[in-house]
Image (tube, rainbow, N blue to C red):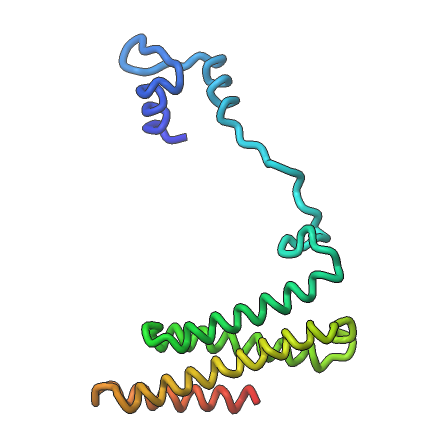
Length: 175
């Protein structure tokens, strides 16, 4: 504990002490009482390592729909962020990169018979919707770059052209 913190507690009257000279003295019983009153205990038992905290309390059959809806919701939020002209292009590129990674992962899951066999039609619909939105994130970023090239000050046009070329190369490698 920091000495200044303890002094503040003493000076505010939260911690009992006495000052026989220049230094404060705290009785062991007063310190124990002070610490016991401020003890922090966990509110419940620790979650089982087998139970992911994201799905705590959800039955197995409800987990996939919740996750599928969450993916579609996040994809829509990313699309709005990339479309928003107040989002700078570097931030938008970070979003596009994350969206592409997630889209690739979902493609792998849907392409793997073992992984996708337990998905309901509704789950597949939500995941397909999420994948379409994730594709739209890249398309929106490309449109933002085109707009930036057309409307940027002359000294920034080349920077945006390079960014567009890098983006197109990255997309062709991912395909």
